[in-house]
Length: 114
Length: 111
Image 1 (cartoon, rainbow over the protein chains, first blue to last red):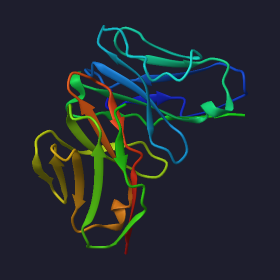
Image 2 (cartoon, rainbow over the protein chains, first blue to last red):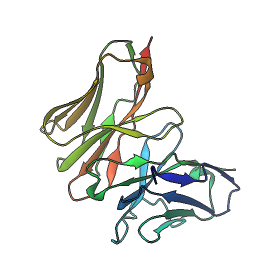
Image 3 (cartoon, chains in turn red, blue):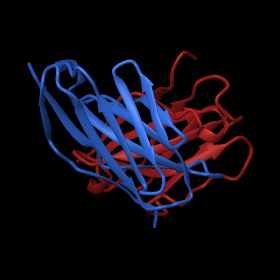
């Protein structure tokens, strides 16, 4: 596609429920990244995928968080048993190999856990 | 622990002035440096990247890199009210794909 597409744009969920966030990267971009941004804060790295290599999961804050990327394209970030501290904007980005030219971000998913 | 530090601001400059945004990073192995602009409620967008020591100019924007001092800056000439945003400094080190972002500097350009 022309840009990085994320869905849903907004998600309100009850504490304890599971949520899935979706990211469709730019066609031809081999690398895909998930970050989250809490209100007024910087970007916190969560996970990245590069081609068929094993993902770097070093930023996932707990085992309630997981992500997969199917067919080297679309990615899904899953948060199980959501907590109020999970409330944030979840940003997906993609790039060509090596990220030398920087990232292109999607418009994000605003997650609110009530 | 790789870190990227920025003054949170806000930095306020009058319209037409030069805005100077600064960033320091902790890892001497860092090789790629980026500036992103983020408007309130929007996602970050890339405005500049620089790999080599010295200056890189693109329109009203100039990125400056000093690897010896582990310092990167962004100059915005002829600042406009539309430049009011948060500017994020980001650093990527060689061989890795993970980019570390600073917390951002809020810039206000007063008309």
